[in-house]
Image 1 (cartoon, rainbow, N blue to C red):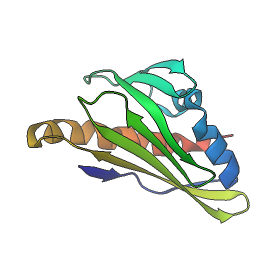
Image 2 (image 1 turned 90 degrees about the horizontal axis):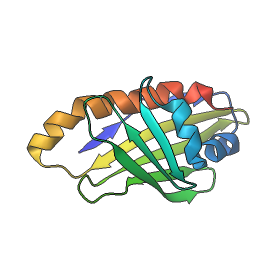
Image 3 (image 1 turned 180 degrees about the horizontal axis):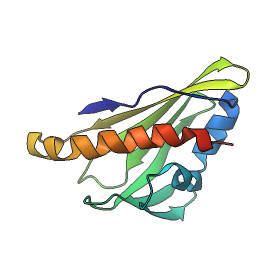
Length: 130
């Protein structure tokens, strides 16, 4: 299952956006309201959405100023969340979130709506990057 957020233009440099997203603690600022968030380490955090199991994400990859890949720590729900970061101008950057997961048809049907809403909210909240 592949899902994409709308592309969000942020009034920050590409490097600022990348550095913000490389700090897993900052994802708490992007999460929907009433989301459980817990930093586990410098490269790992737990979050819980209402009506869904808690998920632990690991920072898997960072391509300086261009891409950040987070992945599920558990093999039970294998997925990645990638932030594609593209410079538009010196202080203007486009960010798009890409979700890729391997789910059976039943699970995909159940999680598609909440995950689409979740990555949409993360994208909307990118304005909080400073």
